[in-house]
Length: 152
Image 1 (tube, one colour):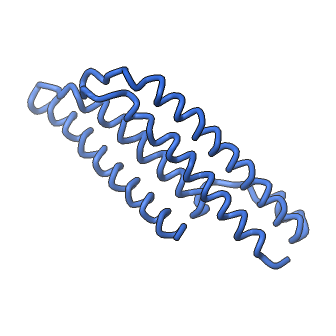
Image 2: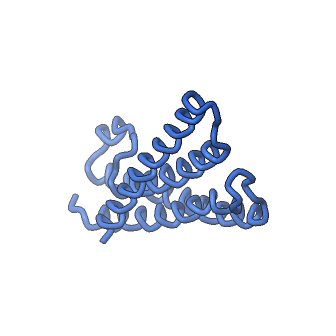
């Protein structure tokens, strides 16, 4: 199930990147061809970027495509390396919890603020932060379970 969720998050991230590229392309076309820049494109591109980056980052916890340094793991025994990986996932889960808690607070604090060029609540831009935090916690716990089941 985690594979499917992470796969969907990566697909959503890819779609967001494509959509953001189209929005920025429209901005460039409007500015240089039509001599009339659309007012909404910059904020729309920023919101799309926040959404796809946070969702792809959460998926990276499960898919293990984040950058990491393995030098210390190579110096440790297999059992110690496994313990280190578990400890790292605990730290990642704590970070996800921080994103969840403070992301909810951030979205709540700006819920009444409107993005003028889009006419939507600023909270919509920050909703992916707590969602990605929750997904990060879930993926980290699942990775810990996988590591706990590994043989020495």
